[in-house]
Amino acid sequence: MREHPLINQLRAARVVPVVRMKSAAHAATAISWLYDAGLRIFEITMTIPDAPALIRDLSSDPALLVGAGTVPDVETAETCLRAGARFLVSPWVDPDLVAPCKRAGAVLMSGATTPTEVRAAHRAGAQVVKVFPASSAGGPAHIKALRSVFPDVVFCPTGGVDPGNLAAYLAAGASFVGMGGRLVDESLVAANEQAAVMDVARQILAA
Image (cartoon, rainbow, N blue to C red; front, top):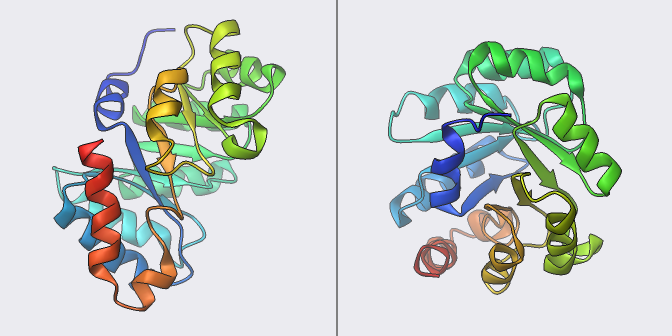
């Protein structure tokens, strides 16, 4: 399978911030802070109220690479792609998501944990395999083991990734990682702790 041109951009960034919040206002605030810290890639999960509207707003900025996370079905996928999402992330393997992504020229990241699931995701046409949940599956050691069997698969571990273990995941064979609660903590946003959120972002950029 020929590699999608956006993969190099994701590799260069190393970290995809996963914005998962109960409040759309908190999500917008967090993204603004992370943008000011220097981050330019954002995964907007469907757990945020009216997430496609947020994707549409962010996608109007050509400097940003915006994607949709926790995409459960084709209808949601098509809504997000129309809103401007350039990558879709599903927590599981769903071959039905391949076609809409292909039509839109978007990257599909399919969730997998076991070798059987990784193979199914890759064979279905996912350009990236999102290893989720990464930490409870074995952390960097699990990524290293999967890489030994699938040397050509692009892996993005998510779940339990933080600034302290980022280097270990990349060394184990991750092409890039997804980082959610350790980077975008809604309690910090609600408390207006901008400095704390931006400090984590800067740690990532400096790592």
